[in-house]
Figure 1 (tube, rainbow over the protein chains, first blue to last red):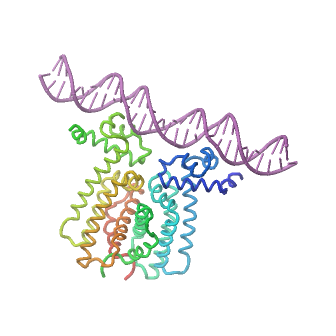
Figure 2 (cartoon, rainbow over the protein chains, first blue to last red; figure 1 turned 30 degrees about the vertical axis):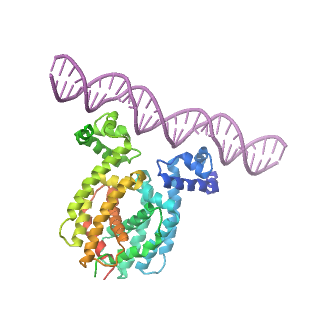
Figure 3 (cartoon, rainbow over the protein chains, first blue to last red; figure 1 turned 90 degrees about the horizontal axis):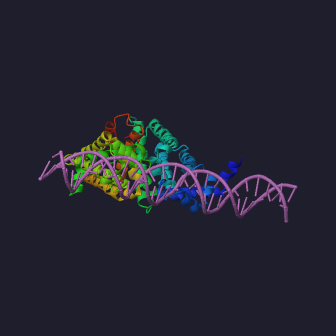
Length: 197
Length: 197
DNA sequence: TATGAAAATGAATTGATATTCATTATGTAC
DNA sequence: GTACATAATGAATATCAATTCATTTTCATA
């Protein structure tokens, strides 16, 4: 059908990407259609041939990015590694993907938390993430690498919350340092904590 | 001066509070002055006798809440306790204050991250928090309770990020469970990590 | 109770921008 | 090269909500 052809076109992606750029720079509400159109090098009206409305641009942007993101995550984790290494790979991958696509990072960290209407979509996103974590942690417990008496719901929040905190700081610092280098020290904290032995 | 009298009045606080209610419910951009005025039981125009504009309502709300929040935090931590107990008290206090004032929790967790223009103000907020954490962690290291080889910048992000993650989940769950009960298990994770010994 | 200042009101103004659509351009089949 | 369909344009429209301000109400004082 026609819509498919359109959606796969270069023009479609340049608009999607322009949306990402402008939303990241100004936030959803301050971004205007005219700015997005200008960034993509098309007329304002053209946006509406490809997207239902402004919300739809954000929605499709998230959809596209999160799809690719989780494919990458899944690949990073699949395999026969021990749980602690899987956790390391997961976090490294997360930080690497966000470092390589700062617009996505900004939008995921702020719009996602902000916009309630995007929330249903986002729930899926963190669900997939949480499922990956559940797999890893349960495997680690079965192999005796991780403690048995863990409150799983809390541990997942603990892990994801801390990564997000690290990412937010990096975003606020305008990405002036290497984010990926935080991965291993962070996982060391997850595993061993801060207490002296 | 007149402004002082106004700012301390009941009406001022009812408008400030109404702002909190409506911002928390709809987010800053979808909230309207009319809704805030209605919630406070005043006319639209009255808002502008007490606040410069819509931004100013949010700004003063944050200012007021964060001032009280950090007084409370400081009190919770001051004293001669060992560092791990201080950390426990800090986290307990943080969760308790947010649980007792859900509007504040929603606004701090979403608007703060979202609105760049509020950021300078917010930097102060997390700076105070980080300073408290620095004090506690350094004390713990001096007393031999906490590990020496900690990357302080990361540890602070790790701690604050994880608490915020826990709070976000609670907010998203509409506050249906007891947030404060998460404090001790969370601090246990900070201290000992998830690895088996 | 009369008077004036301070406070409050809410309808009207203003500005902004998302969205539409009549028009123009582009490309393709014959 | 003509005719048709598809795509793109951008000025005009429609909506919405922040802010203003002429008018009214409240309230302290004499």
